[in-house]
Amino acid sequence: MRKFILNNIIILAFLNSASVFNYLFQVIVGRSVSAIDYGIFNSLFVMVSIFSAPVSMLHIVFSRFIVNLSLSGMGKVKSLFIKSFKIILLFAGAILTLGILGIPLIKNFFHLEVTTPIVLVLITVFFSLLAPIPFSILQGLHRFTRYGVISGCSPLIRFFGALILVAGLGWGVNGALLTTAIATFFALGVGIWSLKDILKVSSEPLPDRIFRDMASYSGPVILSTTMIIILGSVDISLVRHYCSPEEAGLYATAAILGRIAFFLPGALITVLFPSAAKEQALGKKDGYILWTSLSLTAFLAFAVALLFNLWPEHSISFFLGDQYREAAPLLKIISLAMAMLSLTNVIVTYSLARSSYGFLFPLVAGVVIMIILIMTYHDTAKTISHIMLLSVSGIFIGTFAQLIFKIKYSSTVTHPKI
Image 1 (spheres, helix red, strand yellow):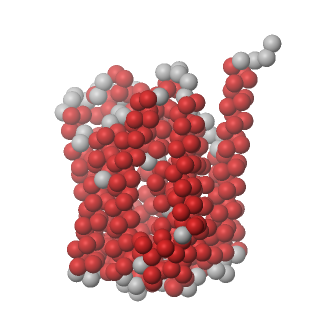
Image 2 (cartoon, one colour; image 1 turned 60 degrees about the horizontal axis):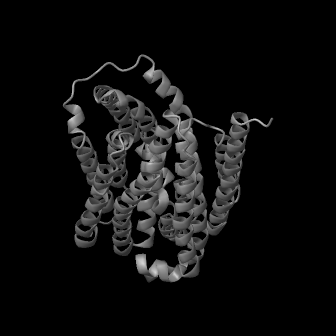
Image 3 (tube, rainbow, N blue to C red; image 1 turned 180 degrees about the vertical axis):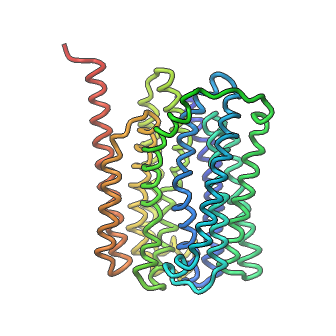
């Protein structure tokens, strides 16, 4: 348990330092462009999360299988890395091509008249599809310090790029998206370089059923990952679609700040997943991993939500300036929703590490209900934020209830009453 807590401290330190620069990047962009342009930037950037959802699950799938492969040496790890990278490269190329062909549709959906920002987002999507592979291998090998250090490269580049291109040269939305594309490419390169010791070893044949097993496991992983990404990002795009540009800009402001309650403790699942997977593979008890992660997450997430509910206007002014103070009511609601989502994410991650999929029904049902409600009731951005909070809270209650039932049922089966 001591090692588990130490790894969490290491990851929290590195990844949240990176998060600081991510938010400083948002501060620079928010202070350098108009509220409307800021809304456009964040609405387009959501495309990176949405299009990357199918491959983001590689973090989970790879970690789950790397744990077992690494026990017999690095040769099999190298083979899995090389083969998977080639497959994802083809997939990323196909997404880029389809995205370019669909630029007119994207412009129409976001009510845009220019093409350059969309092209820059598509380039970022291309590199983002490849990046999870080396990072997931580092996570699966429990190289948390290296993982944390490299994860900080991208935010640093985005931060300094924004200082030069957005604040300095005044390139606006295009500058913010360009520095994001450059940062993603650099992080991918450094991630691959960090695996140079593995690339030097001789490749070894992979188990016969490994890709079949990975494909089977990836079904619930990709579904759950997509649902979490939708919960954490789709509201910005829907507000942009249904509401006025001014209201969408204010909502984007509140959403970006409110998501601190989700991303601040989110680093903990980087340690949670491979640790729980390894303990299960070794047949050891892992209850301490779940409850420690939930406790730490609750403390961090609701501390942020409390701060934003007590001083919403001051928080907005501090981060993004007085021009966005009208977003204060939205910030209160969204920060609470993101705190609840962070707890749900812990339950989802722990369940996936143990190949337990009971959480999928309340998760998927909650997302579907949320989208239907937003499509029906979208008069104002505040209405959409209330729907977000209601939906995420319901999902947490559902996933937590099924987890408790699963734990009690397993305990009853293992130790039946005489």
